[in-house]
Amino acid sequence: MSEDLLLTELCMICRAKPYKYCCPRCSSRTCSLPCQKRHKQWASCSGLRDPAAYIKRSDLATPKGIDHDYNYLTSIERQLDTAERDCESRGILLFDNNRNGAGKKRHQSAKGEVVLESAIKQRRVVVDKAPKGLSRQKQNATRWDKKYVITTVLSG
Image (cartoon, rainbow, N blue to C red; front, side):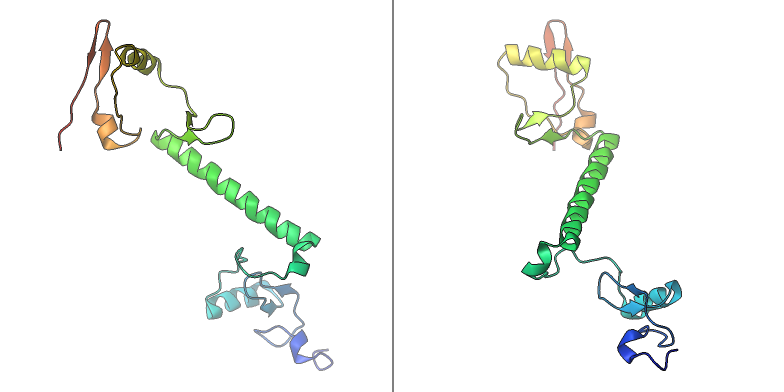
């Protein structure tokens, strides 16, 4: 069977069978998973499509081009969600910069923090706080004691 096929129709690795698969990264044509793995090893190819690779204008408006864009945008959204969950698990406060409330805090402050913040605001005191999750913020023991704001000043 392989005698009837052109060289361009054969697997680029084993040259024994017709190709079935095309590498999304470099368009290398292979016939099986072992050949695909060998290709990745020999060519040091990741096998992942390069989202910044040039695409002709005529290919952009095709279903394939739209799928590429959609998948790329979906992967970015997935990475942002993962990063947000990672920040939340570390206790880092995130800010939401969307149209509804630019610079609004995404998460509500703890009950004690709300009382402290309102007491500070009433006294017209400007306080610069370290972002949550940083060691300086964890060392901060500032609290509200019914009548006074008790602060901790960190040097260095």
